Image (cartoon, rainbow, N blue to C red; front, top):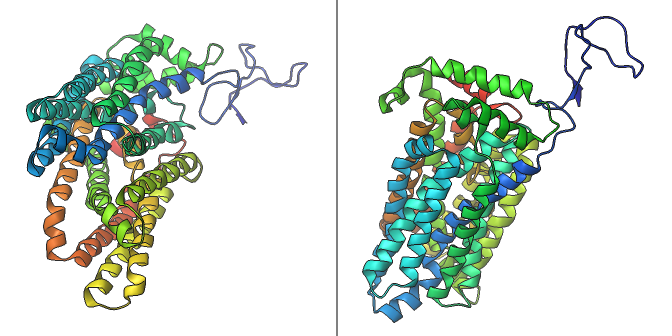
Length: 479
């Protein structure tokens, strides 16, 4: 704790504290503002409601894995028809990514989450009642649109409502819930039919829609649209009834006034020199996250675990999901202690090592040497990669994305970053089989090289945002 520095008269009161010239008592503050009598219970509740959208994201991503044989057998689909069903999620997500910025700026953060929930609900019901591939594909497309918006609005909303000293941890819960959704659908999918598994997606959507009635909208968005009274009310609820929000409120309003002097933002404005570093950091982290091969590694994990001695690929996949959840939780707890940059550097270094070990194992197998060690080396490499990815590079780029864009271009910038992520994901997923046909070891060595370049990128370009207000971060990057 530190005491706020003020110009005060000499002398003390009976309780030993200085008084200002206007005789108001000096208020003890923490390092990010707000007095010690505040409460973050509403911030925590709001975060809990919002990250149900992240859980939904994970459920949608993982749904096709445990349901493949059931859907194909019951609806008499070919493998190519099922692959098309799976791909529609990414197509929908790219549509959602294109629209998410404008939608979130126009409707507000809360309404955008409600919009996403409705799309996901329609998608799950379409899949549940599907009697043909058409309804399956339509449901998958609508679910993709929903999670495309969720992938942007959830971290932005949580970042905008969180106290600066907890923003990293609370925003990182986004990635924890994504991994939790994937792990949940993998595990429960072993015991229920593909139709009943859709209920696991429907329930969180309904809870989220109900929860939105009990939480405030982002005070920064409310300030941006000129609703000063609601901005103040929202911030007071988020910081606690007795908290002193005057400094934080003044900082938000001052920053919004500065932003409002700027012309209405358009796509080309995003490419102005003043925003160049912000755009490079946001898009660069997303591209490097995906080109590091996470989706490809997850795709190949089942066969890798079988070759390493596991009794079934599903057991290996579940283990992978559990590892992701565990290390993502560790990363979220460390983020506001160690900082974003250091965790990203550690994460990228581990990812580089893990994919290098996996590539080395494939090289040994291809050369017919060290065969007794090759499968175990692949297992170690995959575990090291997934754990390292989850602790930092998996979630922190979304945290930083939510922090670095000034509010006047946050919608456009967020759409660009989110679209970059989903487009890169599609490229890697589509090209993985071709790369593996070319060279298994070479594929993983490429992933390792990308992670190595990520270390240099973070060192040169990515700022440390730990413990700083959004306004401080954005002023430094974009001035």
